[in-house]
Length: 219
Ligand code: CA
Image (tube, rainbow, N blue to C red; front, side):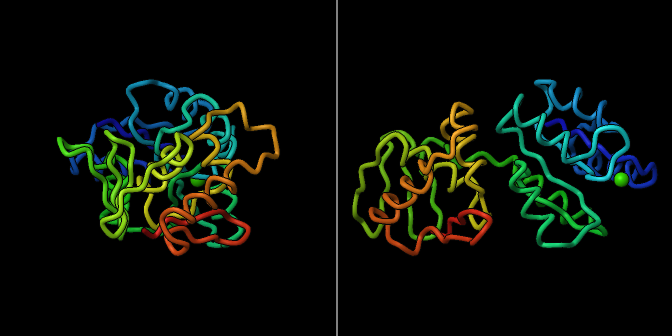
């Protein structure tokens, strides 16, 4: 697994490089936004740790441009700003997770592990979050021993949610991950509709609405 760290502060960059290497990852580094963006487009990068305050392209600009090229690459944003507004904006721009400085290396590696962990697609092909079990082979869900058949959209949405349990996913993120970018410029309510039908099938409580931010799957 190869991690790209984009951070302009040399001490922190070195700290992250040595820490992540010690955790068993191979690490590439960039200290400005432009280099960061071009490295992040490489197919051999599995996860990006991205500082927001960068010379050249800002971290947010990197994130937006990177999302166009690699919509599903896990990106963990580092921010000195603790405002809820910034967090929401970053998640809207396509960050999978964020860390507020100062943070511990142990916490960062735990977040990276979580982001890199594919849904449990072992031989069983089953993913379980809370009360919901998803069978990736038959594309059906199981709740309270009830088998629930899903449309393609519902399956796409549910499997995306189940890869990010407990995390707030914005409508643009969900659109991007499930239906690709053809929906990007439309103000489509396709996510709302699919969320509503999932709730109807699985139970109202499984997906929470986070006002102004998106949805959170709790299972
Ligand atoms: Ca910085």
